[in-house]
Image (tube, rainbow, N blue to C red; front, side, top):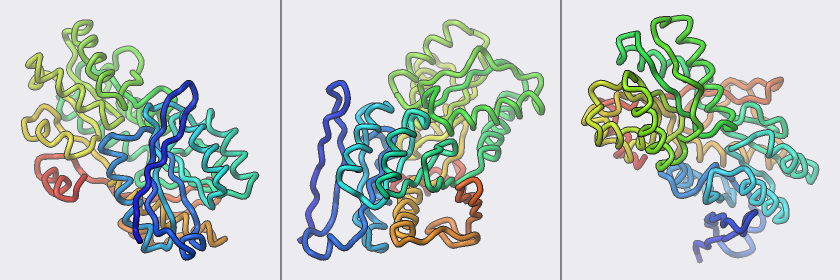
Length: 335
């Protein structure tokens, strides 16, 4: 009999971490390797889509897989969730880190217990067996900078949002974009430092309001983090600034489609989070079997990938453009 069970974990400081576990109850299930994927935050469209991919791939790869989503983008809640997975003696822990350094001690304990650790969006996660990425850092950062530079006419002041100041990949993308801007678009000027708000809709709204007041000559907002474009778009619409301020960044298509069609969000790039969920399961099944990824192996949804054992990196390149021509297709996929 197929059932779905909700698992509720009490996090540090009284917070609650909620995840879902779907699987077939019975003797057969015990023989399947267990994978728990701890993401940055639960309940937002990006990670809801990733969970769909995890559940879709689990039967295909004969893996008992589920996702745990903290109620806040908080490393302490991720630590608590990982500790629970260690106690469950899962075969593989998947992690999309909020703060790689803060997670290394608990992931080190997991590995010492014989659990494989598979990271995504975690290129600086030292205590991981492998990290897989669906775009290069330089390629992703530069693609967004080229787009916002085009929309700003190659000059003017802009600000940068990231999910938080400790999310490793968001900050690496921002580093790549800013360095590229200084080299290729010298008439553009980044104002201040980056803002760690783009995984929170409310914080993105507040920061955009504050920055519009402080910088009446602002011409662009570049955001890495799925809630950043949505929060900023609401403010630009409310203040009737959508035509004068270029807003660029990655987001869940279904959440931002109306802003793309209205022109408030000028565009951006993502990979498919459902595909990332499927890849978590496929790679976990390989690691749980005692095998290792190999160069030019085929991964679901992305084809052949490069494998760099010295970097513990599995590298794919599969971006989708968030523009008026492509957005309806992505929404139809359920993203």
